[in-house]
Image (cartoon, rainbow, N blue to C red; front, side, top):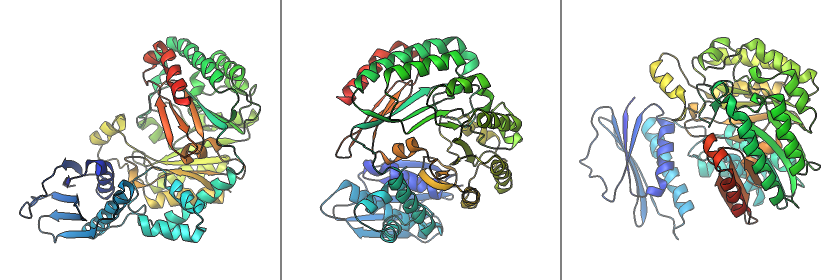
Amino acid sequence: MCEIQIWLNRQEFEYDIYSLTRAFYPKSAVTVHCTDAFPEESMQPSKDQIFLLAWCGEKDIVTECRMEGQPLAHREAALVFPWERAKVKSQIKQLLYQTLCQFSGRTLIWGNLTGIRPVKLAADFLEEGMDADAAKAHMEEKYDLSPSKSGLCVEIALRERKILEGLDYQSGYSLYVGIPFCPSICMYCSFSSYPLDKWKTRVDGYVEALCREIQATGRMMQGRTLHTVYIGGGTPTTLEPAQMQRLLDCMKECFLLENLREFTVEAGRPDSITQKKLEVLRQYPVTRLSVNPQTMNQKTLDFIGRRHTVADIEKAYGLARDMGFDNVNMDLIAGLPGEGPQEVAHTLQCIRRLEPDSLTVHSLAVKRAARLRLFSQEHRELSMENSAEIMSMAESCARDMGLVPYYLYRQKNMAGNLENTGYARPEKAGLYNILMMSEKQTVLALGSGSVSKRVHPDGRVERCENVKDVTQYMDRVDEMVERKRQLLE
């Protein structure tokens, strides 16, 4: 581990430069200095320090890496003209990537990409008229992607285009409803989730506020076609049957559900799933259920605070099947504490026996809000590393089960600088997931911490957020409604 000092003179590129550096040196402390004074050549790092320079001059771009006792890594190129922020950002990232490759002796399978939607880039190239081979080659040239990842992006982009064919983006929309409560807070979680045992007496009040937001926004969306509904969280199935019924009745009264192509409910925690709750869901047009084990290793479940057993997962999944749900997703996380290829192989073996209709494989993202960051500092003996080998194992398992990749996204601080990928059987892909990542359709998001996105005809995306704090949301729900009104107008 070393300390990395970054000097740059364009603050608008700080995130991309920082993210790319962390991808090469994920365990190093990184400090960024934004300055107008180019560091002198005499300014040299001490032992266990790396100096990184990323400089946009008036006519050229310079990137350098300096480390005590190592040859200087240096790249420079003429600046693209006329100045366009997107083009300059792309140029400096590519130049910096080449410098870091030379300096570290490594390459990255995702090349110089730092954004969360690489498939969207592939889709744009295809819409511009490139064929699959040309789009793949362009991604490898422009973003230094490995052939495996460029191929995966193009494959998914082509599949998404077929799934979305004929969907009316302009008059249609999707609906997200957030339930922020969980049986317990998982160690890796950075969402705005609240433990049910401490908030049980406030759930009725939350549902009441949520129904007020549903009623008001339902009136705003009259005349538009609702394509997908996603009830997420948190854990929506922490609601008691009567609370769930009240919520779903309100949604049915306020939104036209006749043209729905998908209705998903996250039942992410098996310890929140009961027959009575599933009986309530069966009364409504719920087409897709998500039962999320994350891992099938009991030791890991105990570590991360899931408070249920592997047997509970299998029982909840079996109950969903017995109740007639024919589109069940399962989520896994690669990179959990102490899990390597052997542990992941065991999880995949268990999942193969259950035969879900879709499988979403996440690469662990340790964010500042997660208790797992503190845990990792206290338990350094436990690795939290994902690898291309593990993701390849998961992909092979999914394809062997007849599941193909249909959506993909990346996050900050992902283990191994990898990705999250959804796999599904034909006709079982999560349409809401595709629409969220492709940003082709307006998403109306309700509940605390949710983010609505209006997609304009020119492709521009405008957002508005609900407050994250549950108490604030309940007290200020009328303000949240007004934010939606201004967004949609």
